[in-house]
View 1 (cartoon, rainbow, N blue to C red):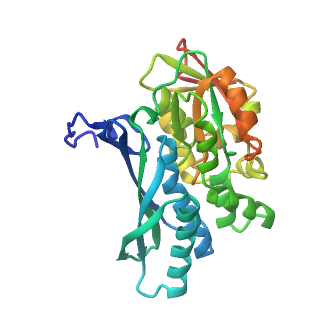
View 2 (view 1 turned 90 degrees about the vertical axis):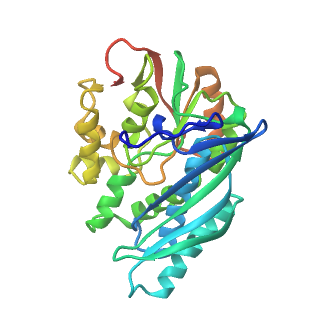
Length: 317
């Protein structure tokens, strides 16, 4: 996208040049519109589960930017011979999550395609002063994550026929969980930077938060919440191919303590589907936030701290 022309408008608060989760346009002094779009091929065998997951993933970008989703449009691709009951299942799953978010589906678009794909274009709203971006972290902040890692590894295990039924249910439930509750609780706190953890993995999205600052992030490896089974699968090389792409991209930006094992390194760059929020805020507020989150979200955790850069952009200890 670096070769594409950049649009200029004083009301465009967030565009694509900062690797944020959505674009933001100020309508007036009290209202900004948040716009995002996301779709992907199936990550679950059941069409209904696939629809729920894809919708939760698309809605997450609005929460990451500090807004409330209000309107969504379906985007659906499917083959000529695709069973109509599968189309219905995907759409019903999406409708369920949009309704849970308090938003509305008002239409959409379908395309015939050899590979099924589903997602949403989502419109949300916020006060301009409440917009969150991924680049406002401060020296002394800590980082909070609201969902465990390992989604990509467990999805790879499912594709390979290795996953256990309880692990499969756990990863589907994690992917289909909205970030709504985490966002709503976090509104009572001063969040300095925000994103969600998706295809670039934890380290990739952390890199986007700190690459254009004079700050660095120290990640506390023993605090990283992981889905059951994920570490074992990673230890046996059962991870998505995107994991290695993410690792290669970050090779010059991330340092590791010798105590950090290879399997955990893989999970730190494991592509997540509909992962949790990643929030930077003061340590005092973060401790209160995590206590509040854990009343509803058991795996919320403080996973690192921010300091002036003196060495690696990201260091995992």
